[in-house]
Amino acid sequence: MSWDAARLANRLKHRHLALLTNIAKHGSLTRVAAATGISQPAVTKALAELEDIFGAPLFLRSGRGLQATPLGELALLRARHMQSDLDLWAREVEALHAGRSAHLNVGVVPYVSSALLTAAISQLHQGHGVTLTLHRATTDHLVPMLRRHELDCIISRATSTVALDDLMHRVLYHQRPRLIAHSRLAQRLARRAPDWAAVASMDWVLPAANTPTRQLIMEHFIRAGLRAPSPVLEAYSTDVIEGMLTMNEALISVVPEDIARELCQRGKLGMVPWDFGWELPPINLIRRKREQPLAAEERFSDILLELCGSPPKA
Image 1: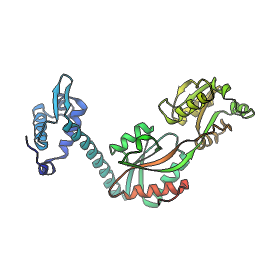
Image 2: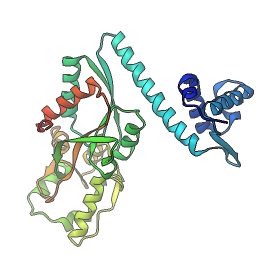
Image 3: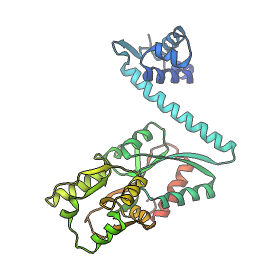
């Protein structure tokens, strides 16, 4: 096979992108044929046509099925990006046909204020006609989704994974950790001087071990010469945390202060005013670098920065 760049531009079709992702998903042409309702000879012919376009094999047969070659890995990566972009494009066109200006897919970590999100989404829709789909997940899930073009932007914590050339981020606001518990337990603890040894041995609800919040909580107790709390439940859902603490007066948790205030407004939980002496990693708006930024994404960024009181870009 020989390589001709014009052949890729002129002959590559959407069905080729689907074939690539289906082979990666199913691992064999037989399973691709069964899943797509196309005959195996037709699938085999389509793969041969695709490899002719690229000028080299994209997959090699092995005992584990079809394994992508380095060229196949590159083709698959680009195919996924192109499919995601086409899906986003289709939603944007659908939005315009429905009389809306655009549609955004936004990822958000659990510990972002609901008040901030509802205010930003309302302004975006009412002022600019933009609709939005929210995807709730942790940073380690959202960043890969952003890179795969499944999301337009994410509201998340700054981590080492975003300090790369393909992403940019702006700090929206900072958060301080706060202890929360059932209102009666919170009142008892609030009357005491901070006693980390006493609460270390209590029953905790904490986020998963791989999250920044959990890691900082563990380090806090270790620095104090104490054994880190062992949670009875790992949960990042504020609804679950609120429900568990409401039902069990012996449980305690740590959430960002703005989230704590929202949870305590309903009266069943209370915040313990002990100072941890440190802040959580800031909440950021993280976006892919684009040659031409999406107008809807720019409006959303401006609204968030204004609501959070962040300084304008230099």
